[in-house]
Length: 304
Image 1: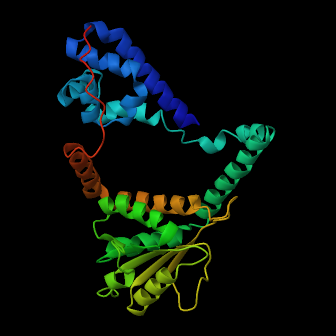
Image 2 (image 1 turned 90 degrees about the vertical axis):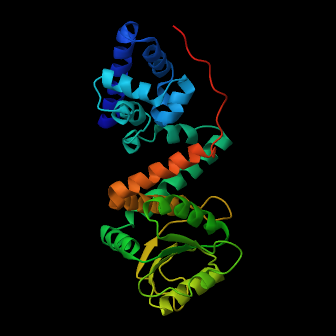
Image 3 (image 1 turned 30 degrees about the vertical axis):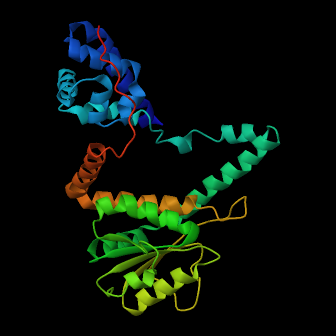
């Protein structure tokens, strides 16, 4: 909890400094300072161009205020506000909230059961994600000519998200099947220079099993994310990340699988270095420039 408190203190000190120095600022910088004081959460979340648009100033004005506050640029200035939104010591805050739910009415008690199950699933899945497996998996993925990811039905949502974000860090990542065809169709040219990530949970997808068998026969490295290490004959992965999926309803719980995939994405971004960071920035800039995100009408300029 110390880092979280420290970030909160940094944010509080910056807001106090803005309040004490706002009268000394130019009208444009005053507008920015007032916005930050009134909207610290949004300022911590938004990219520089979004903040500039909301305030009605240029991005350069935000940079000038950051430098006026003693920072090298906008990102170091925004960082304390961004970090203050993250409870990176949540595990040390206790489970009093769960205990209170358990003592409540029927719905509260049910919510406590579901929430505790979700937490247990994530913890178990991440605990089974051992360092040796992780190191080898990242090596396979980053050194592959093409890294494929496949899943069907409900699991397809996991594969889609992993590809949507992961391709920014790993350009050779491909989601299969991409349209209405079969994943096997996409694997015709796969060989020992490639890698396949298969995602499937009980009851196992016949198409996914067919795809991982086909890829394995061609010598492709196979990484499997599943609820069992033995899902079908002739499915012999190089690496398996076993995840818990037991749920309080009729279908499997995928929060553990998503946590494993998020970890893989984090390591891909880290291993990609500056090039990966630039790709993320380029994707974000392109989305903003092409109007991919909905934006509220421009707010009027703030006059002080």
